[in-house]
Amino acid sequence: MLTTMRRHAITLALFAAGTTGLSAAVYTLTKQTIAEQAAIEQKKLLDQVVPPQMYDNQFSQECYLVTAPEALGTAQPHRLYIARKQGTPVAAALESTAPDGYSGAINLIVGSDFNGNVLGARVTEHHETPGLGDKIETRISDWITHFSGKKIEADNLSPWAVKKDGGEFDQFTGATITPRAVVNATKKTALFMQNVTDNLADYPVCGAE
Picture 1 (cartoon, rainbow, N blue to C red):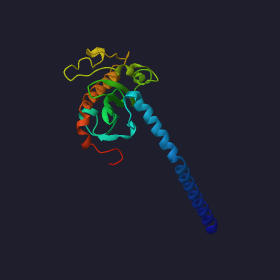
Picture 2: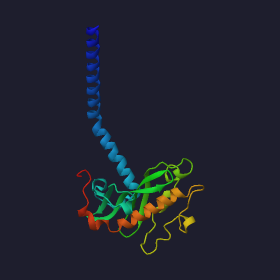
Picture 3: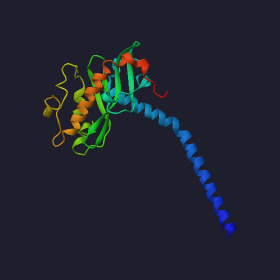
Picture 4: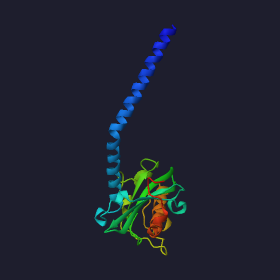
């Protein structure tokens, strides 16, 4: 009986070692492909919030980590990408969080130049109610595309609200909390971005933290 148990133990150990080795081999073979695909998807996302014709640098590769809880919704670092034209910063994309969504935090990314012109915004993660709050997704509705081309001025923020609150953005039927949260987060993020290049030297580079 003892011999049988040992034989089973050895078999299990060999199986575990083989499985671990196979997993490691698969990871090694696919790691580069996964990284390349992630980079492609990231560029697609950035190009939705900052038009590609605006810049000539490796936009997705100039990345900094910004911590600004009041402007960006949480105390966690958010990634900032700088778009340059002939070496001069012309726009940026900044991740942000709307902490007050109906079903929890809503993560988004906002593109803007440094004069208050919002170039685009996209939600990257949320848990809002299907059929109601999920209209913040472009696959469901074009609602969030209406941020593009809007200007934000610190001395005139009243348009940056849903219509129910006196602003110019539509709310959703039966769901005002979700669009209100996204509008507010976009507003705060775009305001913060107007002076973001003044502090680039203070932000750690992505991957160097």
